[in-house]
Length: 279
Image 1: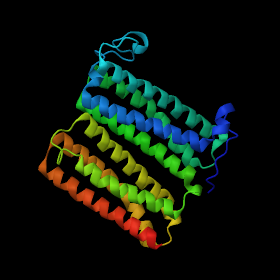
Image 2: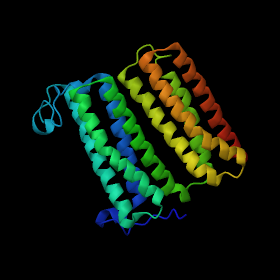
Image 3: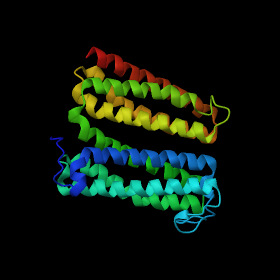
Image 4: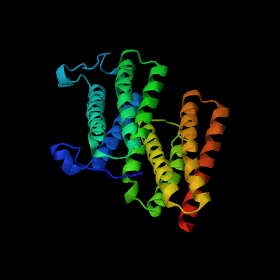
């Protein structure tokens, strides 16, 4: 199946940028939205707009915010809005003929379909602020990020070598102990900065294992190396789920399972690095 991406389906300036770069910019904006959302939740900024949505407490465009948390929450909303426009534009470009691979079109389209759901969930985090809503809001955002990361890996796959896959595995392996070290298991004060840094490690980890699974299975020659890169995404999801549950419930059993899954993921990624170098 061809991975070729074209620019003929893009209008005007976007044709000069190219679909792969448009897709990469969308992932960057989605990443910024997620991290700003984590920081907004951790600082309580989501409640600073006095249950107003989509406007805030400073009038139109929040030109006169009541306080810094209000301003911070508005910045999160603005970045999320820009990311939404990029998601729509990327999906339209994919169907206008900017990419040949149907898997890319389906991935970005599913991300597009989840976007209005995410917007409604974001609204409910302001109006109701319930833990169930907050969790759904987070997981929907991560799913959108993962879908666009898959699309990026598929589009850029022809330009990536086995060496890039090995580097991705190394980045993923480095992100695992960072994620664990920044968890409440080892950090007494789980501040907004710590939380944001921890979830930045999560997104780096997810990107690494997605690149490894999609590109590594084609670039790696040995069967053990391919098996390792294909196993890593499932372990990464387990670490993310268990880590988040451990933070929310403080259950010793979940803490132990989270640490076990983290060790298993680190060992898997380290093995991927070693096998990749050998191959």
